[in-house]
Each structure stands twice: as C-alpha cells, then as structure tokens.
Length: 246
Ligand SMILES: Nc1ncnc2c1ncn2[C@@H]1O[C@H](COP(=O)(O)OP(=O)(O)OP(=O)(O)O)[C@@H](O)[C@H]1O
Ligand SMILES: [Mg+2]
Image (cartoon, rainbow, N blue to C red; front, side, top):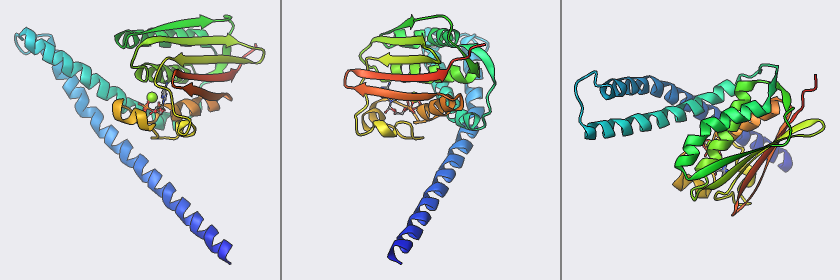
C-alpha cells in the first residue's frame, strides 16, 4: 500500500511538472511574439535616421544609432531562436536529397564574420564530396548555425573552430570542434534539455538554452543521432545522418 501511495505521489508530481513546463512554454511564446512587432519599428526608424531621411545626423549620432541597430538585431535573433522551437516542434520535414557539404559551407560563410570578431578562424575539412542525405536543407542549416553559434559564443579566447564532414559507408558524419570553455562532466547530460544552461555559461554568455534541444530534435527527425565530448580544452559535437544513396 505504501509503494502504491508513493507511485501515485510520483505521478502527481510528474503531472504538475509537465503542467508547469507547458505554462512556461506558453508564457515564453506569448512574450516573444509580442516582442517582435516593436522590434521591427525600432529597426525601421533606426534605419531611416541612419539614411538621413529624418534630417542630417552627426558622427556621434551615427555611432549611437549603429549600436542601437546592432543590439536590436541581436534581440531579434534571440526572439527568433525562441520562436524556432514551435517550428521545430511542428515537423514534418522536407524530404529531398541535400548535400551536407553545401549546407555546411553556407553556414560557415554566414558565421565567419561573427567568428572573426571573436578572434576565431573556422577551418573546414571535407573528406569526400558525396555526402548526400535525404532531408530538409533549411532545418539542417539550423543545426550548423546553432552548433557554430555555440562554438563561437563559448570560445572567448579565440582560436580555431574545425568543421569536418566525412562520408562513411552508411552515414555522413559531421563534427564541430571548438577551443572553448568546455562543459563540466556533471552537467554534460543536461545540455540537451530545453532551457538548461551550464552554470559557468549562464553568468558570462547570453542565451536561452534552446539551441541544442532544437538541434537534437532536428537530427533525430532525420533518423540520426548526436553526441558531445568535452573537457577544459574545448568541445566537439558530432552527429551522423543516414547517407542517401540514389
Ligand atoms: N560549444 C560549447 N562549449 C561549451 N558549452 C556549450 C557549448 N555548446 C553548448 N554549451 C552549453 O550547453 C548549454 C545549452 O546550449 P544551447 O545552445 O541549447 O543554449 P544556449 O547557447 O545557452 O542558448 P541559445 O538558446 O541561445 O542557443 C549552454 O548554455 C552551454 O552551457
Ligand atoms: Mg546555443
């Protein structure tokens, strides 16, 4: 009877947690949605002023407006990251033969500027050029974007980020390696949880804790898997996807 009571209590606690999780999701979705509209106004007017459409501006004003523009862009990206969760949840995906190398190239191109500003170089290593998979190019692009953005964000001392794409027998294997702060072993199991952020990351770097949850969902929806190795010298994320052989 005692065991049964405990089981019931556990069930109730679990349901309460699930309820809280849903409420938090809803709350965040509402907030992010409401944030988007005003951000668009701020961007619009900032641009107008920068163009001089509202009158001559001084160099100092131009500098200030440029900071406003950049910061607004950063907030917008954050909001889009959060909204992305809903989109990722409402898979299904496109099913087309896509080249992982091309997706990797495009993502690296997009990340180069941010990397350079952080004192990082991105090196690509392609082992073979037949890395096709059946899937959704836009979603797979998000995987690279998230992994690269983490690699950049969590490597405050600069260095080299290595992106490797390798075709094996049945799978395409991709890894993104960074020379960053690493993830403590006691936290590494939780980084895939939504909203989870490692203690050392929370204080110093901005983020929501949704990137990797999205990444894992996308990889698994493609029939793949993803894992991580990390120590104080850096972190390597590796994922594999079933190869498409026409
Ligand atoms: N390359 C990395 N090096 C060190 N820690 C990392 C790395 N990638 C992820 N982490 C840790 O895992 C946590 C979860 O990563 P995730 O990308 O999901 O969230 P985030 O980067 O904090 O926020 P965002 O939702 O903006 O991506 C991070 O907060 C950080 O603690
Ligand atoms: Mg992230």
